[in-house]
Image (cartoon, rainbow, N blue to C red; front, side):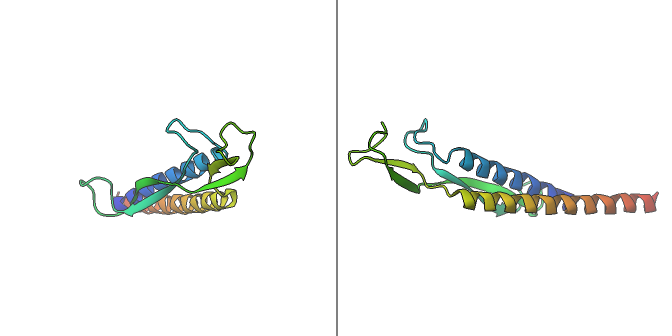
Length: 132
């Protein structure tokens, strides 16, 4: 019974990280310069099935890694101090609509896992009540 709660909890954590990553992409949609140098690179979350540690069963999901995607777009702005010799400025290749869709998917998955968690909790409470 606790496995289903653990699975739902792992999915909640994974979807929260996905939502935070989408929000970070949206916040940096026009960031030209980062501390690493160059424009911000879009991040995407890669999930992996199973637990992150070896002391648990192979159920649930966790974030395997967060990948940077070196995709950029350019705009012509010769007055910009970050413009190259041809007058083009390199910006992150982030599509606002794609990020919004990813955020909605993460929200729906989060809500579904909360429902699964609540059902598991209800079943556990009912089982304990029957045994008592």
